[in-house]
Image (cartoon, rainbow, N blue to C red; front, side):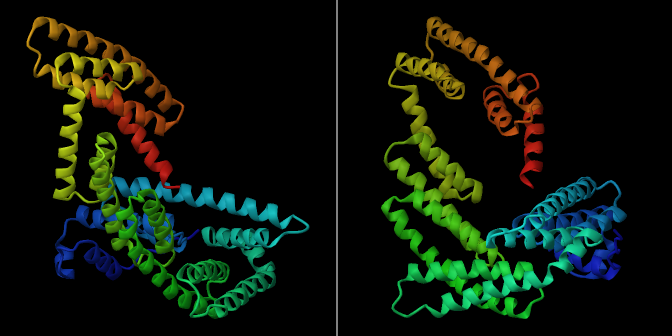
Length: 418
């Protein structure tokens, strides 16, 4: 497949757009080559992750490749460009193989229902986009053109019938249900025939209606928070995320702010019920979205309340809590209480009791570490991460736990891109 090089003037525009601190093309020309390469690589990475992986826009694959190739012309050692060019090729080859195999299998069937008919045409279209130079994919696309158009027109006719049934007396939920299903069909029509003007007009009209649905559902979230219906709110946010992706991410910032608010208020709700561990989990989720002072203060407050409760009213009470954690295999919590008790241990006997528990933790840690390494070697990276995080949480310098953890996270990050 031939690759066209991106023009120099376009590179300058990309770099300016990628670097907010750069004011004009003159300053861009004065940038070190490594910085130009980094800016291009950032743009390419955003195209791949946001447009290809999140929005499913396969045309962005070629754009991302051109940006990475341009980055390497500026700086052949740019690690992101080198790594992600290989990732792009692997993604393209893997997805093309899946698509063309699916197309072959479905086209060989003597009879297909509507869903299988859609899957056939979608697989052919996807294969042709992933490999424009594939004779097989292009031939299949041409041979199925008439049948594909029949399916697309049937989708658009159903959209027209369903939206025509909407009346002012309908409830919001009933209207939303019709619009969401109609939008799904319009998206399919546009996916199968992206240059069909009727499909594009229908898609644009319904996109505006879906935007209203997102707006309205965002407005229902405070009521769910007030009732303590946080699982429902999280489910609502998941649906909003999906709808938002389909309309191009128009509401991304507002949905992210709503997700932060959900986790922050959820943490407050658990705090009020003295469920410290759950409050800490929700507060950390909120902080993962936005490191606000209010969420940091909440985390500090509930952590201190948890620590005080686990430490107990006396040394013996705290020691019993350590033993209970060890019995459950919760070495992180046991370690946390030991650290707290060590500050108040007033006798050799108490210090000896703590040392005895530390030995038990070290013994348990050996098994957790071995299980984590084994999970890594078996490519069960999520399991490896969970186990090795426990090891590193107790002892950051334990054998090669930190190294294995870093590698497991990197491997899982690559898997998560597909």
